[in-house]
Amino acid sequence: MSKPPRRPNYECKLARPITLADGTAIVTLRDAARAIRERFGFSAARYHQLLHRIIDGPHALEYDPMLVRRLRRIREIRRRRRTADRLGFRL
Image (cartoon, rainbow, N blue to C red; front, side, top):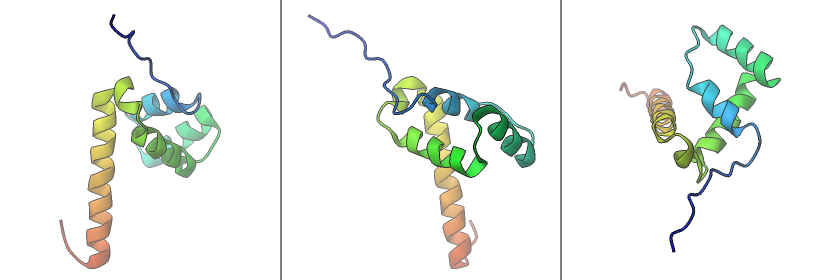
């Protein structure tokens, strides 16, 4: 007997909207911060904390693998650049 397909189980009810929101294009950082505050009611910093927790979760890849991989890749590139800048290297 085969197992029924698993449905994503998110830690909070905001996981899907947060993940979807980051998949949309926003023109400027100011627009992004304002859109995040209007849509979710918290700061951009808190939004990114939640987003990173969500994309590291075990069910994120089941939800939207391409988006999650892209967000992880972007995060890693930014992390490497910050580290290189602190150490005086240029990437």
